[in-house]
Length: 72
Image (cartoon, rainbow, N blue to C red; front, side, top):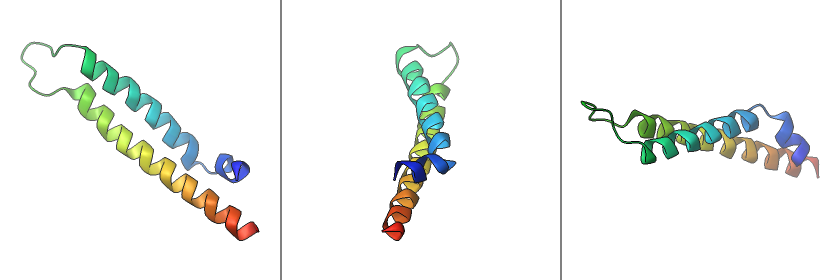
């Protein structure tokens, strides 16, 4: 199953977006808002990137499991 997972492009993309998301969410939670800003863009962008990253990882794992089941 690991070979199917590493061959799928969705896995590294999902991993990359998830790592970037964790960094942005951490920055959004720890840094104060600049004066005049009413929306925390780091937190918002990190959340959106996190959802996308998890979406890509989910479908990469789903495809790898389906390929492993078809190979048996």
